[in-house]
Image 1: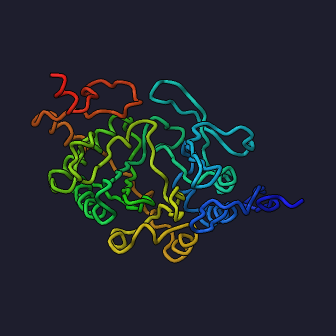
Image 2 (image 1 turned 90 degrees about the horizontal axis):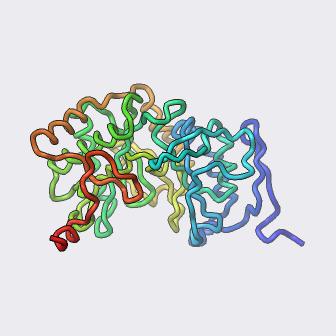
Image 3 (image 1 turned 60 degrees about the vertical axis):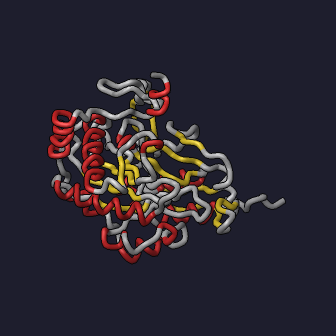
Length: 340
């Protein structure tokens, strides 16, 4: 009797043979995109994806029943992983340790896709310096009542602020309504320092466009403005990598673009079927990011200035994060007022 979702197929990726089971299983019903097509997508973009996540502890976001099913984050190396899938030990905010996959060759992505992986969520560190980020990540996150155009407008101001701080940012679509901006930095600061740098940047963006951008952690204080999510810089917080397939009905892909292209494209332009053509036409637009790492001195000077001159200290951490030194109370403002 024939297999329900097709007989297993095998792909040669570099020196590896990757067996893909149930290749005809539909992962994206709205588009009819199958598991086979997701695997073939990751083979097509394996080279630039490896540049983006290679040597990084990487969490897998797995959709074993496709986009309409339940998903989960695999923060440890899956059981039965081939011996050539390398791993690296990381430390969670709780102090617990775990071994995550650490991609070192493109075959890892095809192997992970066979497990139902859509997104790759790399830490902003590279081994062996897994406690010192080498990537500053700015997550420009529009609220439900806003959209991609709003994120693009705020991202433009992010670019200006980065330039004033002596930094060069590289944008990408998030695969949803947001924009991610990446900066290569020297791995000389810990997670706390890098997060403070993002907070300082976000505050400056808010000053320049207070009607459209905010760093307010509590949604009730954002007023429909685009949020600069500084907590994506906290330990164990990640964003989907460049070239990651996202769990959207259209199988969108987080795709690198230039600043000029950012205002001309739409997130739906890039999906499992079209992103490889974008790569073939434009190349790896984030490759130059590795040519020169930058320092965070200016942003950290701004953070110290805000604390000294304006009384603006640290911001709340995510709810699952241990209480941190200098962190304000994690109490929703309206609840704090009702308790007084």
